[in-house]
Amino acid sequence: MRLEDCPAMVDAWAEAALKVNKDAIVLVHGGPVSSPEDASFVLNRTRNWHGFYGASSMERLPTEQAPTEQARKFKAVTF
Image 1: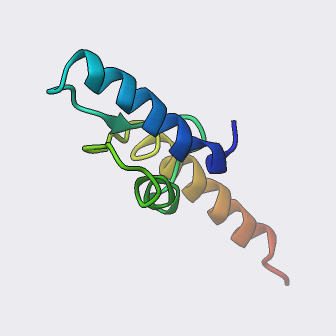
Image 2: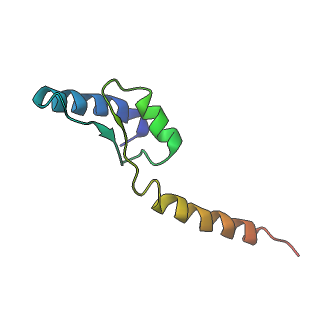
């Protein structure tokens, strides 16, 4: 799935859920939505959402990115 496909999917799922239960809470989560920029992209292009639920995008992915970036910096050290 591509990030660009998410807004239409969120709206379709939200409409279906809200037809069954008008009090349903619709959250964007997972898939290609893995950064604040991704969440902003989706949330600014959908109609029926209540927020974003971050799990690995808030704890695991940033933790993985930090050591990778640090290793790149050490690898670039010249002497």
